Length: 304
Image 1 (spheres, helix red, strand yellow):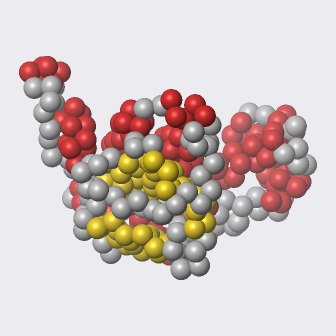
Image 2 (cartoon, helix red, strand yellow; image 1 turned 45 degrees about the vertical axis):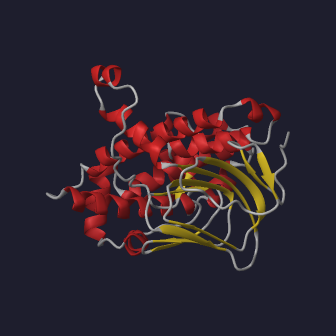
């Protein structure tokens, strides 16, 4: 029974432990845990792949994308010509990787698209599956599927993990990502554009701004910065962000900052001045008024 994955690769489906990375078979499902140095890995003509990086390094490349790996992020890559992971400095990578074969994915797609009567008449049907849109590095804490991956990663370090069923875990993750996907399509539909493809592309760029806000919440964040990282004009960003999230970027940033301040006050026991300064508020009175406006109580009410 393994709970320490240092320098090993463990597949929960086969219950095998290896000192070298597995070569994924396109016809198989995998639920892989690893915490090891990995300089390079390629999965050609790949399946739907979900990777949660607890601690990450290197780069992931597929199609025309090239992303730097950071900790506490997850990435979904759709079936395509494949992806490649490059880590030239050979830094250890602590990750959970789920590979879903085409058959299981098509069975899931049929389950989601068929009526209850159709499922009774043809219980073993399969259906072509649409691509999942979440091909961006996403903060795990910001999405239900990311939070689920965090919990599975935590569970993998406990003896109880070996009593779980890998296919059921995979089905749960697939269902959660499906829900996040459709929630994303709902948000994308709020973008003021006639073509669904334009709505989706705009939403993907908004996701980049959304992630940037959460990754840099302790620093001042300007509209110019968000415009640059998302490749949207300031006016397009401002209008689309407000339509999708119901708040302007500045309003959203302040709400996230105050939520983080509440967390610091409750957990770390820092002074109000220290927390305000940490989150970029130069005036404690302004910070306190904003805090009370959002939570109904002053910051002192939540001090540990």
